[in-house]
Image 1 (cartoon, rainbow over the protein chains, first blue to last red):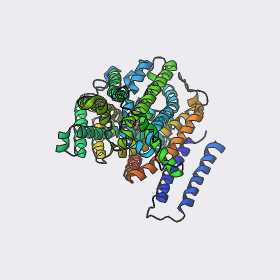
Image 2: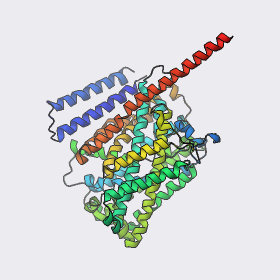
Image 3: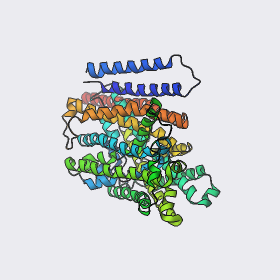
Image 4: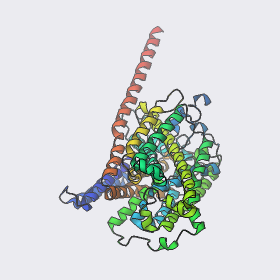
Length: 59
Length: 505
């Protein structure tokens, strides 16, 4: 049985992380995070890979 | 069952079975037909009011199209909810489905991850409906302020909103103290009546020729609109906010178990509700932009229906029409108040919130929940603009919808749940559509609405949304501890009694 619960937690965390990152990147926030775009993209990739592994490849 | 009824109408002792907005769990027998299901959802188009001036600010006349697409999204989602409603007849409502689907059977430990997700979905749904009170209290204050100059001389708009909140919430607590007068039939009639003033004010300017089509067609999108990531995120955020209003007719779907003939009543109710909502949302926004133009609509963020009514009926007629509209808003507040109190009581009964929120007075009214909700909404009124509150609450509704759609996918994939009897079934393969719209909600719309909030009202809405949603975690851990201790005490008592009875023998 695919673990939908893990997928939901992953998607919620991804959403909040990406939303926060997008705001920081586009709003010219004074909070400087080095290589923000790469950090965000990496986070998304980790979540997608985890989701793929748990939900689709290894049900 | 009748002796277990709380007060005059709603059966709160069975509220764990039912946490939808208008609900009478004592009538889970098949008692309604599709026309009554339709009547329940007829109050929903009133939910467009807080966003009428806000959407054109971002997408000009295309706001009309956004509303239409959002109702279409409602069609896609509500078919899944209709099926869930008949598959889980004792768990009506989005919070009920999620709490039933996401719950590990015979879980021995304290903290069931699955139960946390179900409870979180219910909490998100509660947070989606609960601010209806504050939003419409602000609108009532705003309409009174702009309609009666004498009031505007005496009070500021914020003061009037706060007074409206105190009077309406306090009045409703008193009115419901001796039992919730929430009988299903009364609910249907009130919901249907609340649509009338909105329809009259909307259609009149079309009849009198005050709707100028060039006001709509001259500016479909803002001049600086581009199809880049920034604007697409804004659009996703608007869809999240539109969903809060235009998909709320899930109320017609979640009554599934109560339809006399779910197989035919559910699709009929859904189809007619969808059509009514589609035309209402599209026409209301079209009438406002058609009469006032895009700029004129943006200039009236709180009460755009006043100039529309004045154009169609003149000043005196507008006063009558708007007073009727205000009365309809109070009805919506009453509906949402009962629904929120019920959802809170349901979560406490399920062990997903501390027991205190489920406490009933001698008349069966969840008075603690009602007072907490009233105070919380008075606090929300201080945010000032209804769209800021709506934006925060849309975060909750997006989470609730996303998780409920994933619940549908799980209910189709899990062999035990898939075998449940379903008097109404969505078309074959609908789990893929549900998965698609689940992902549209989480993460796409969720990211969009957070982004839009941050652009429009700074971080206030987003933080309020996050803090309210996150506050669920400590409450859930507390209530799980509470439930676990109670379970341990019961097993210890039963162990002692069995030992003592065996000694006697």
